[in-house]
Image: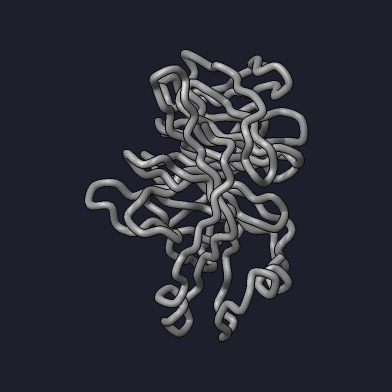
Length: 265
């Protein structure tokens, strides 16, 4: 079950040793898998609604405490399989891992679908969602593209991106100099290193850093106002929801989480 808080220590020396390199500081984590009977489901996304954390696992939305991740409840979404998630202050929007090519608007109080609408033309594997206060950003893994959509699915803009396998997506209007988009990629095959990218809201890359754990896939991304959250997806071990700080190079080594928070919150 996913209610146990773990503390993850990641060696940052190698990440920060190269001059000019940005890096990711892991602050805490919890086990994000969810067991139903003999079956353990792996998480593919994470979202923060201002009070609770939500993880998307195959056929389920899982409600958790913030920040410890203790289990509060679940909603069975079968045959809909939740993937990327966004929260608009009331509703959760989620892409579908099954090949129906729809985004679903869900009432988190009941787990019921309020409405749904189709993916933009050319999208076949919706992998990331983010909400900017009025519209949705939608990342598609197969099309290697980001769209900005209305909350009913109309296309407002198509964003160019050099990220070829986008997965997690988050909107950040709190960090100085923003607003920004945060994007995590999830390369398969030979499993090259996943990265987190800092983008303008027009899709241009500002900065990037390696995912804090090598050899695993980055799934899902959320921003809670201070921290980035992501799913560390690794088989067959239980995967983790990571609470992270993205640290841009300012010519200093990480002295403490408190110092980093003061610089980058």
